[in-house]
Each structure stands twice: as structure tokens, then as C-alpha cells.
Image (tube, rainbow, N blue to C red; front, side, top):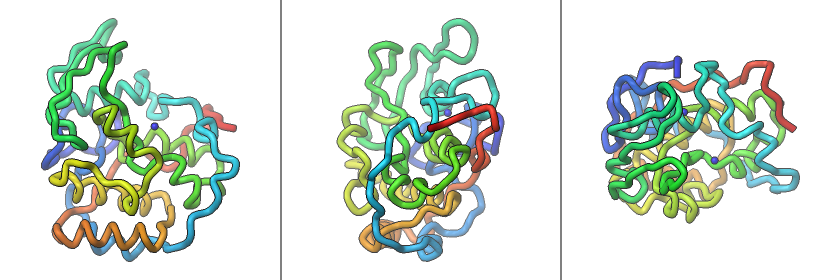
Length: 231
């Protein structure tokens, strides 16, 4: 709901490799502590979901970084191990998610029978209700395809998340929660999305247990190229 930008760095508890694309959730280099960054987020109530649709964020998996691969395959290439392709180096047909950050399990990816989703760490519906409703389409398209906000994960676990924020859903794999929440903070800070009071409290509670957790950086620009359109 992944690349020719930003330097990919090693991820504690994630599976990204150094030659697989741009920075994604949990990948922090330098950067201030995520806990301190929570206080920089605007706190407001959740706006109505009225008017939301996936199409408001453009066509799914648009190639906004212009590398001739769609965003979904970019993220699969970045996050899976033992990747195999068909017809070049874009279309991922096989790989291992080892471990899945949300469940901690090892999952085999096979194209057409996939148990792997590409999750928007900050769900698009959540973003819509916390500022994105008022953006121009170019910024919404950028958010939907930004590697900083995208992660290959176990499909059933991800679908239980829905559009939950940190106050309503956290990964069952407790070892990944600090990195997950840090990624949400990073995305919301980058795009100027707000948080609810309950969400801010939940973020602080998680990050208090890992006060040195860095804030991920990188990803794509916050505006998509002009050729992309959304409703």
C-alpha cells in the first residue's frame, strides 16, 4: 500500500542489502535519535476519511524514480534475499524474506503466489486523515512510492494492520517495534504529517525503550515528476 537515490545502509533487524536500492524503513545513518524527533511532530485530531481513495495517491507502484522498474519490484529487490528475476533485472520472481520484520518468520516469495506485501509504513489512509488530504497530487504520489515509507512484509500480518497508526497497531515481532516506529516518525516528519495525541504517546512509549534508535533518512523527493497524475 521500491532505485537511484540515497545510500543504502545496513539495517539491524531488517534484510536489506547494500546494493539493492534506496534507503528504507529502519535504515538510519547519522541522524538524531528518533525519540527526540517525536516532539517535532504536530499534534492534532484525526480529520475525516471523507474523500479518501487509493487513486488519490496515483497509480499503484509508479516508477517515480525513473529507473524503468516499478516501485513494487524495487522494494522486493531491496528487501529480499536470493532474488531471481525474469526478463532482465526488474521483475522479481523469487526471493526470501528472512526474516519478515513484522512476524519474525522466514517467508518465500514467488511471483503470482506471493505471501509478501509491500506495506506503506505510514498507511495512505492514515496519511490522508493527517494532512495528505490537503496536498497537491504530486506530493501524495511521492509518499505512496517513497522507499522510506515502503517495506516488504508478511501479507497476512500486514493485512491485519489496515490503516492503523502506532496507537492502534504495532508489529507482533517486538524486536522490530523500535525501527518500525522510528520509520513512521521519519516519514511523518519528512512530509509534514501530523499525529494524534494517542499516537504521539504510543510512539514515545515504544521509543523510550530504545532511546538511541536513530531516525531513518533518505528515500525519494517529496514531489513526484510532473508526468505522473492522480485524482
